[in-house]
Length: 209
Ligand code: URA
Image (tube, rainbow, N blue to C red; front, side, top):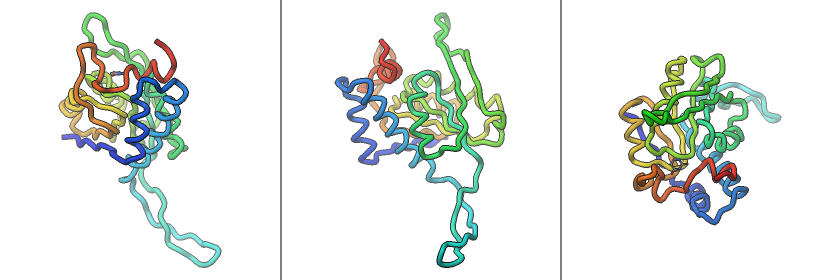
C-alpha cells in the first residue's frame, strides 16, 4: 500500500493558509505555491541516496557525500501542475521536466490523455508527478498509468491538498506510488471541489475564471 506523507512543517502550513485564503490575489498565490513546492521538494528528497567521495578542501583531504541515485524528472499534470515546477527546480535544477495533459471525457467522465511528452530516458529516471490538488484522483491515477506504460518504475505523487477520495484512488490503483501532501482535507463537495480546499487551483494560478 502506498504511504501518505503529510508535510506539516510550520512554514508549509503558514504559507498554505494564505494559499487557501480567497482574498489572496493571483501574484501572491503563484509566489506562495512556488515557495511551498520548494519546501516540499526539500522534504520529498530526504530519501535520496548518497555516496562518499574524496575531495580536497583548502585544508585537507576529506571524504564527503554527493547524490548517487538515479536522475529525476518532474511531471506536472496540465495545467495547474505547472505552478509547482519552478519551485521544485530551484532545489533540483538538473531535473528534466515532462508534461501530461488530460481532459475529462464528457460521456464517461473519465480522464483521457491528450498530451504526453517525457524525457527520452524514462527507464533511467525517478519521477515526481506534481499537481496542486488531488481531488477524485482520476487524473492522478491516469497520469501514473501514462508514466508506467512508457517505462517509468519509480514514481512519487506530490500535491498541496488532497481529499481522502483521491488518496484512496491512488492507493487502490497504484500501491507502489507514495503520496506527498501539505494537507489532507475533509472531503469533496458535489461539484468535485476539495473542502475546505482553495478553489480552482488552475484559475487562481493563472488568473482565469
Ligand atoms: N481541482 C481544483 O483545482 N480544485 C479542487 O478543489 C478540486 C480539483
